[in-house]
Length: 514
Image (cartoon, rainbow, N blue to C red; front, side, top):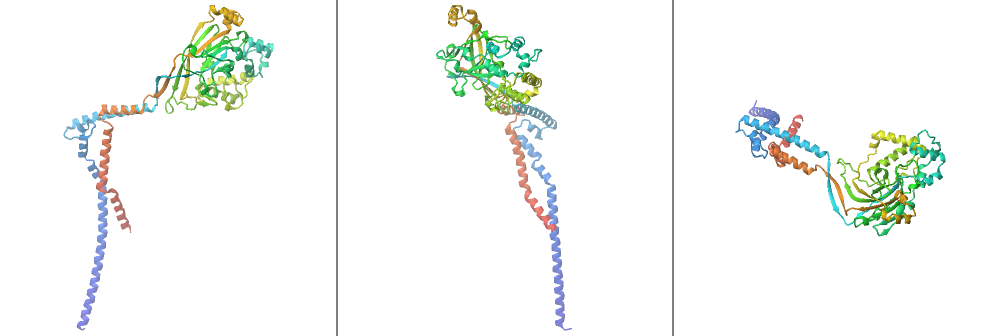
């Protein structure tokens, strides 16, 4: 073997050895990378495990101590400061916790009180230049005139009325003849007429009025007549002065000689003063005036303004209901009308029916006895039927309150002149003629306005007061705690770069899986 061959062989061996060495170094490098990644994963895991310790460092005892020293919460520094004895710190902690508990109780109690939405009323007297005069509805106590009844009914029916009256139709008397009687039709035809009722009428002592200024209306007291109730409430009469000569004067004829049996035990007129557009519930809300007296009616006007939901009054904002101005009485009466209509298929004259309810048939006398009266007894017995109407008070209402006084009429010195004028006796005058004067006492009115009994501003004021009294704190103190906790969380996030490290851990785990 020559020298050239030996050198070539040695070179081949060196190259082979060099290649193996490079491969060995590559394997070792790859193993080192894997070990490095594993060490990185272990390092991240160890860091995660130390997060709680780091958090405790952020909110360390020293930081709480510093915060307790500077916070405006009274007593806090005696708890957090290590210079004080343990017993003293415990006592202060108990005291602070006790008053915090009292504070929480008071805050909850006042918050519940606020959400009860109770109300109180504020009365204000307001002076104005003029006042709207009320609508005046007048009803005769006698529903049917004797002169009409004697022509309209048979003798046996008249005798039955003389003994029992129509309200006792279920008695032993045979009322077969009345079964199909349309009582409402006869109430309209047989009522006292306004032309006979109104003898004299004057407005503010200077303007004469007549029966034509009265409108016929069917009420719960039969046929009545209303003064000053125009279709447009803006056209209602107004007064700019007060007193006897600045209102409505009426001289009325009671026609007691034409009273019919069974409908009333008294003689006189029933009068109701109400707002224009309201249905007059004369039987429920009216007052009586008697013959033989001059009746003076002084008026007091009141506006009621109630709080809407969620306050306890739950007042109704709507101004109209089935064509009538909304009142609780109208709502309840219309509800009963719908109840009677559903049970009996008709309506009674004493309950209203709005123009938008259609042409409803009036009940016959037989239907009243056999259906309406039992249905109304059931209504009165079951309170839940009335509750179904859901008739809350209106949010706004105007009320006229009368104050009544009387003087004997006529005086002796004018009796003779009146006898000549009416061509009648003194007895006739005292039994049939009534003078009535209606006027405002003062040119002002009362506004009774509901307000929140415990408004939100009072709630905040009380909470602030109790916080200061119990723990010497305020809303600023609360913000101090929020600020302290927020700064701690922000420092923790900035120091440890939580979101970036989580992203790096996910990348490392992805490389290991690949």
